[in-house]
Length: 167
Image 1 (tube, rainbow, N blue to C red):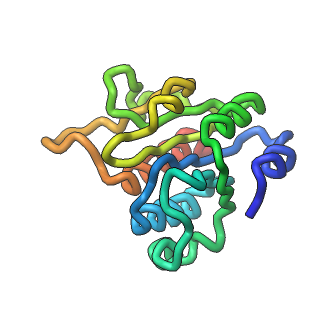
Image 2: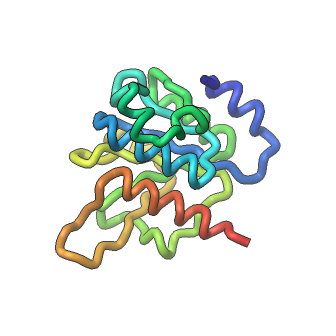
Image 3: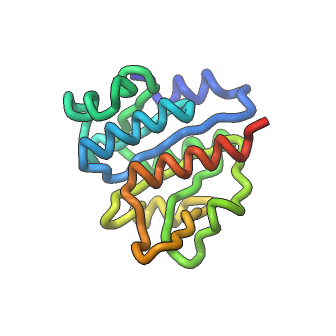
């Protein structure tokens, strides 16, 4: 496991970097699926809380199809402080949101250094983090159900970032 300080030092000169922060992901199947998506879409680091969510367990590792062993992961004690540390280093924080103020994912201009924050299905990203975000994005829904499973939503947003910068 990498520390945030080590990651930021190592990536100081990098123009483009994608970091995924997970807030209150308690379902091990969801965490595993998110780690799998993170690996598939080339996420540079996954950050999660020691206190708010599940840990990397054998169930998570199995659900990740091996990605838990491949994607760089950092467990932190304070998501808000960690988020501000990334912002000080030039990262723009964005949260997945279903609120009216959120921009459509399909029209969003992604920053090159992005910290994408995904929250639990029931509550979303905690208000403290949401308030400190630079942007809020939403995935437009066209059916009668207004939300996706957090692992599905994460995959779509990570794909949105990669599509935005595809050459």
